[in-house]
Length: 414
Image (spheres, rainbow, N blue to C red):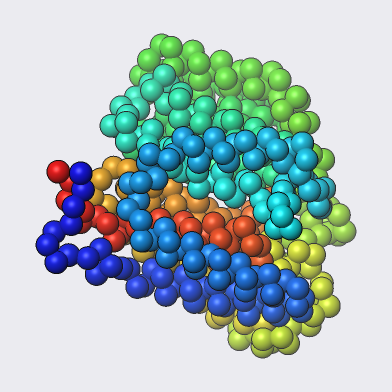
């Protein structure tokens, strides 16, 4: 059973910097959503923030170890909702990602991200660092593969990639060597070598396979692992056309146009969003045009500027200094989560915090990068700032879990 020391309250360990930073970012996000001049979006975002804060304090008050018992149920429920959304989900912007329940619309993919973190934290705690062979990691990879496939079919490539990033960072933290992690993702590079490189794809793939073979030999991989990794690379290349064309046309074009901008030199097609976003960010100059004064924002110059491209609004209206300050505050928040992971009292809390760090951190990096042309457009929101009820609530739930790890790390177990 678990007890607290006499006179000790977990609320004494409340991490105010974590909470206040998240709140500041959310309130700033409300301002930015208001700057896009859509009253309906503003009301929904305010309502979502209230719900998110309620969930934050509810989760914070609970010992995070309780979620270890419910991990399988929560993960199973989230996967079930993914199956439901593929059959009866609401379709918008060419994707079937939303469920409408009693008048409330939400994205099950956001729920899966958090529930998968519970499952992986439990899995890695049970492995106790024994992640040397492909058989050791296979159950965890299957845990990611099932929701990955369901989200990929919606299609939502961005959220599917988030699941893989969460898995990789948690596995690395749990003791899996970087060379093993690279081999797990290497089959993807085989596909890209054949379909995304603009020069000599077949020759490039051959050289790549040779390098994989040499790396497996030099790094002394077990024979079974070497055969599996090389086989995955070979067959992923052999059937690369199947994998490549399973992507939606607009997803393939986004990847190709990012690697080779000459495909759309005038930015009238697949590069339209990215180029217009870069122009908006650059037009803000050093200090920006002022809140509600962004001419490009007011003219709805950039599609989805309230969601995926909200950083372009920040760049135009608050300028370079405002954009840099936003980035610094976001990374300060991530540093608080990282510190909680370092100070966690047990493995489950540590892996849980690392999963949250991966979830929030990857979305921050990719969302900002695609707004300034450093990453292909994959449709990820900027945590705490972008419009989106489910994403905002999940962000606050994640922060609540990190807060719970920080607050309850002094619990005594008997």
